Image (cartoon, rainbow, N blue to C red; front, side):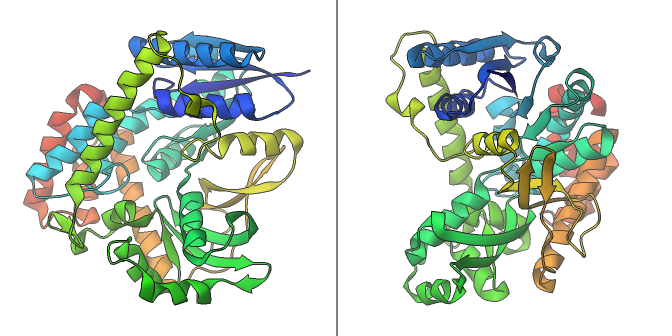
Length: 429
């Protein structure tokens, strides 16, 4: 039986790593696996190593586990490389929210666009470029996937500035399709769909079941919706005839002129991000105890769950067996008219032994095309700012984003963000 190697960089994200490993252990893929764990944080790596080792031991499967703070020790021989890094960790993420908050800007997630997304990109992109160069050098034939945010900015930077080719994965489209199926009472497994956009603002444009157009069913549920059930996403659906993924908490950040204040349709924006960050702290403490053997492994760790990791093993299986199955992926544009070539789009992509191949899609409706193109040009400014370490481009990115009212506000916010994250921004020193 052929031995395969999966390397996880940023493995200290213990919940993601545990979910991915659980999927691998349950996948039934006919291969002997080596799992390589990499994280520059020694404590986080030890937790991931302990957790994965206990999971493997409990299943009794023949899976080898390697761990190192130096990715160059682990990357050689990799068949698949997955990045899920978070430069600055949850503390850095918290600052991405809190610094703009002092400037009157509220963000429910702060990891994609807006001041928080821009700040995160400035930290993440240089690290990802270093990783990508090592992947290209040490395992050039490996399939390279990224889960880290901001997705479009990271994938664009890697594909623009290195010879590595990365594909971005996110569970948002699948989650939104399941949400719509639940609303109309149709099994998720029976639908067909087309979708295109920028990650976290991807538009589901076609939805069918056995040839039946499902949009009339979706229109029929609109009058019955709870007023607090993602009202902005449904407003966009009514306006543009397509549904945005990934629902309000992400989508509103692309429309800051609509949400300058602390509430979005009566829902406090800032509560959402603090809840997620604090929840991550609690999960981390629990995973540490489990990794050290102080608590038994949760039964739920071994159950097939929905989440960020959910598509990777089916994609790997499709690649290894050359099944040509289709999944949402973030790839350089080659097939969508109206979007500049190489800008990163989230769209249906076929997983084959020859690589991940984007689908030819019908033209985007003009209203949707305008919003997506605008967002992607913002990504381009942010990517250049991160690559060059250029403060003036950070100011331009903030102005373009529309979260700030004028140049003075953009400059003040840029300086505060750069100061707050200075330890993680050596190229701005």
